[in-house]
Amino acid sequence: MRLISFLNEGKEQVGLLVEDYVYTVSSTFPVTMNLLLNDWGSYYPLLKEAGKKILAGRDTGMEKQPLSGVVLLAPVPHPVSCRDGYAFRQHVAAARRNRKAPMIPEFDQYPVFYFTNHNSIQGPGVVKCMPDHFRKLDFELEVAIVICRKGRNIRAADADTYIGGLMIMNDLSARTLQMEEMLLNLGPAKGKDFSTVIGPWLVTQDELASYETAPKTGHTGKSWNLAMRCFVNGKQVSSGNVSEMDWTFAELIERASYGADLYPGDVIGSGTVGTGCFLELNGTGKLEDPHYREQWLQPGDSVRMEIDGLGILENKIEKEDPEWSILGLKR
Image (tube, rainbow, N blue to C red; front, side, top):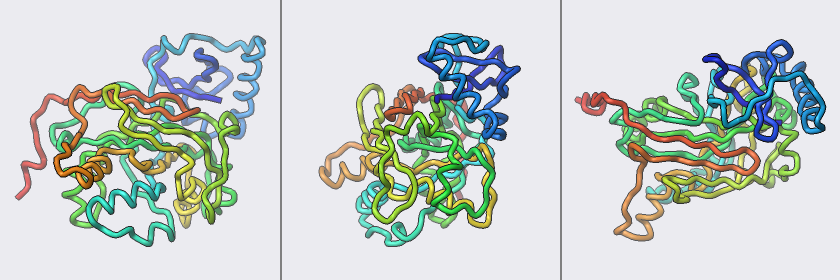
């Protein structure tokens, strides 16, 4: 099942997406994704049954309109929180190798995450960035989940039942801001808080059953064989697979919920897949060729991310008018 959030007469609306048509009826189902997630146990089976009726050609009484005629929002437009993990060993190892640092052994001992700005979540479309963001502006190819049940101290063996569905995530990063502030061993903050993109829709686990695969040896929870790709201005720059996650979402949920409540609407990202950002690609390129020319996102660039089963997430990067620089305020 695929669920979207979109603008309906200027207001946020949740919709059921079936074969490129959006089905909605507010008298039967919640108006927003947050309302749906907060009563997932009641609404999920009703929506699943509605989807079956639609595919069988039976009337559901739901309003229907083509997907091409709606303005998509982030599937979860207003997350309760947003954490981002560090689950792909290949990315971590390559990034550390490129800056001549040994692989950190703690990566294999426990999963980690950071909190990012849940109020900067957005979906497909234009991403506006300030001038300082273009000082090494980067994409990050990731996958994300949303929590659909309240829980605390959740064990990894039970954690997959707390996942409402999966989405593509682009954790945009302003690397110059990020690297400067992290010298103080606090962050990331301004290097990350301006935009995180998720979408184009939320795909529930039942729709991904045929993609399920075993996690890596020694790990607990579901994994999915979903190829990941990123294109910048039509040129492919990155590829990977969700199954390459070393730490599973179940293990990230276990860690996140230790002594803390998780709520419906909490979003958790995987972290960057191997080759999934310019920071890693540029570092590897310079190691292999001293004349390698770095690449970063520029105003006007288009970023297209594809993950099998999860759709295509497209954004265009635009520069905001002000020339105000916080980097210029350094003493």
